[in-house]
Structures are given as C-alpha cells and as structure tokens.
Length: 319
Ligand code: SF4
Image 1 (cartoon, rainbow, N blue to C red):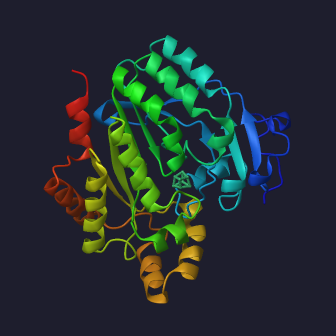
Image 2 (image 1 turned 180 degrees about the vertical axis):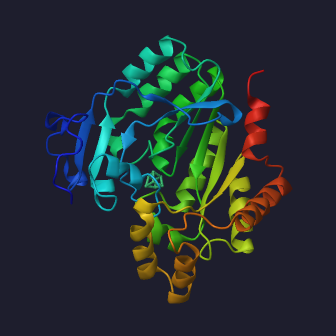
C-alpha cells in the first residue's frame, strides 16, 4: 500500500474519513469537496454525449484490466492495490451538479455517468451519491447514460423509471463474457454475469431503456464466436435495447497487474497468447481483429433486432 500523501494540494489530510465500517476494512476513503463534477468529453461529442460525471475515483471492483488504474498514479498512488483501497469520494456531487446545471451549461447534450470508475461500486452503498445525482438530472431534464457492472443499481430503479418519464435515459451494463471463470479471474468484485443480466431485465420491466456495453471482449479467453453469440443472445433475452462492443485495451497502469493475474488464472497456452497479443507495450489488438469482433457482435444483435449504440442513441435523441 502506498503511504505517502496523495496530491496534498487537492486532497488535504483532513479529507480522509475516519475508520471505515468492518466491511470496508483495508479501504481508505478520501472525502473530497469537488468544485465541479461535470467534465467535457474530450474531442468531438459522439451522438451528443458532451459531458462525463464520475462521483468516485478508484474502484473497489478492482478489475485487473481497468484503464482507470492509470488515473490513480496522478493522485500519488500506485496503480495496483491502491486503486481499490484508496477511494476518492466527491461527497458534494449532487449539490455541485445542481449548481452547474442551473447555468444550463450542458445544453441539449447528454451526461455520461460512471465512465471512468463504477458509480455503483461498493462505496456507493455507503455514500449513496447516485440518488441525489439522478434526482438532479431528472429535475433539469438532462439526458444521461449510466454505465456499471454492479447489481447495486437495482436499488435506484424507481429513480431511473422516474427519470425516463422526464428525459432520455440509457443504462448500460458492462458485460464482456458469460463465463464465470473470466469473471472470477479478472473482475471478481463486480457482480456476477447472471446478476448483471437480471439487472437489465429488472430495468426493462420498469420501463427503463437498458443496453449492454459488451466489454471488454477478452482476446483468446472470451472471443470464440459461439461465446459471443451466447452473450448477445442472453442480452437479447434480458431485453437489451442496444449493444456497444469493445475489445480489451491494456493501458500501462494495468499491464503488469493484468498479465500477472492472467498467468495465475488462465491455462498456460491461453496466457501466452494473451501476453503475446499485448507484448511490447501494445495497448490494443490489431484493427482488423477489433473490426471482426465488432462486426460479429453487431450481426448477431441485428439478428435479434437490436440496433448498434450509435443508431439507438440517434433514434431517441430529441430533435
Ligand atoms: S468496474 Fe469498471 S471502473 Fe471499476 S475496476 Fe472494473 S472496469 Fe474499472
């Protein structure tokens, strides 16, 4: 564990919360008073997605491949264990959001909630920031998406249902494989695949648009066409309104963490293929491979009448 002060100018020592409850033993919560919570999407805004909002930094789900690990380095922590044991909590997120939305700064653009780290990670059970955020977005009728790997989101389904009456809402559950062995090896603190599918079903039953971020598709361990077909079929059965495929990318902060775990968890031949695919600081798979996987998933989704994410969002956007 990293023991030096994380970025003292931003997060004074007084912001460290007192001893956490037993279920969070080993976790240090850094409670932050944020000045702003809305961040502009870098570059062009795809499909009107102009802003991001992340109430937490660090993530107790601790997925080994997580690209957000790199951000922890900027806070003065290591990108391994510190990523899930030093959690930063913007305790005033809903209040600041309300202040920012009052100025009309988002216009008609969407806000993407939980793009960097999971807004329904375990810490949310303690801090309960999302209900206030959802009520604020609903009050200002701001279109938004939420992305998560956690069944904790089910707690807030009534709020999502209310929001969906007032504005455009899309909940994206992130699920890259139905295989419990992949879940246990690489994202064991996130909800199991079946629980994520049940969350999609519960959202749809409540009238909330819910799709699937099919991510990360793990080369060699989760990219067999039959496995991808079964995954898309399960998403369709759960009622997904759209899918967005994404093949695993490995950032520098996740590389060692991910490959060490892959060596422990996968059969040697699979680990070696995975390690070779991401060798020499390579972050992503070759474009033709990514295209092949993406096309395969979209084709299977189309078979069920499920549109790709860009088409879905364009179709629901208020003219
Ligand atoms: S749930 Fe998302 S943000 Fe959290 S560790 Fe996993 S990939 Fe990263």
